[in-house]
Length: 256
Image (cartoon, rainbow, N blue to C red; front, side, top):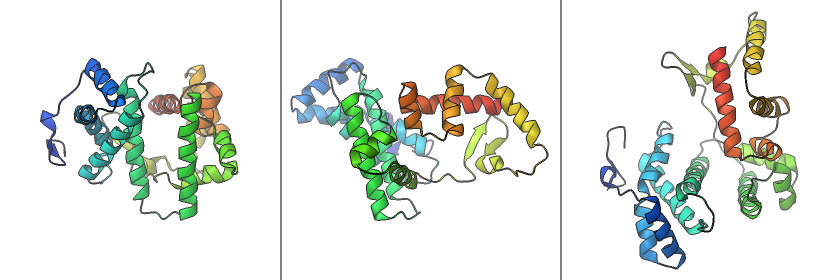
């Protein structure tokens, strides 16, 4: 799958079947009735979906065959847990499940060592988060997760942060088709005489954002809240907060 490669895990990706939405609905109903052959057909018919997710992780130096297999596990979990009574497209539900499975795999194989107790706390927090999300149809706050676990909020935050994959200084953060800006380019000197000019430009760029984008940036970077906390306060999903935050930061970068 390296750009032009069409075979991954022994699968010729150019010949993968793509199911129509109606076909998925029929197969999902059969799966809920215990039809194992329908489950296999649904898995094979969504391998392109797994492939599209895996491609997002192709620049991390990981073995893509391994990521594809891990992604397939996420796909199977999505199939087994999908609620056909909800008015939601299967792919909308499956993609986060596949991404989550891959991210868990990457965290478990992280070169930075995290204590077993802290890792266990983090995984427990993720399980509680998933449980509360399913029960209330919205993502819980850190406080709610900590309360259900009987743990301190600070301990939950620390545990979750400890298993987040570190970002390389050479990670690209913006590119307009010309020179790419990397994380290391954003690490500045507080004594730089040009800081006040950058501050003026930053304020002007923020002023041009919408009210919701300003609110998200304020909560995230001035009040130090997590994306989950912001999502709970504003009343949208964490994924929407992440997308709006990235779009706002991208607009700001373009203007300054």
